[in-house]
Image (cartoon, rainbow, N blue to C red; front, side, top):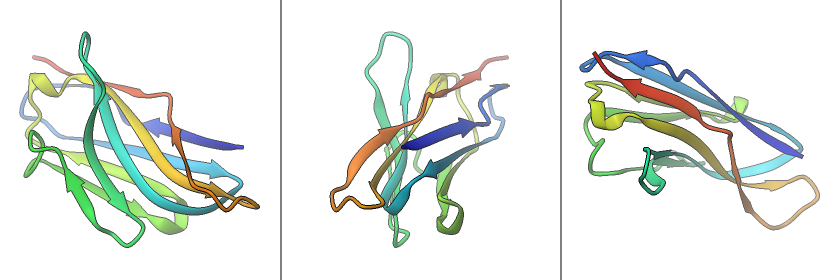
Length: 121
């Protein structure tokens, strides 16, 4: 089995910074992509940022220049550094990983349980 566990979500004032972490554990053979998504109340889940195993990154336009995704491949962990936070960044942030388990040749997506980020004064 595979587990993704997020951490770091808290209440932050506008303009503040926050770092989220997501660690994948279990019988993992290979990770192709890890990423962060978010879902605000009443809205659909949306992509925030992704990073591939070779370090290529992609960001939603709304977070470019403010958020930075990075990964520690040895620890199967992905981070999201968030700066200049705005109230509209308030959401549950989910970690997603596209990976293959040991003994399996196919990749599939796994999700974490989510961590709440609230931006408010």
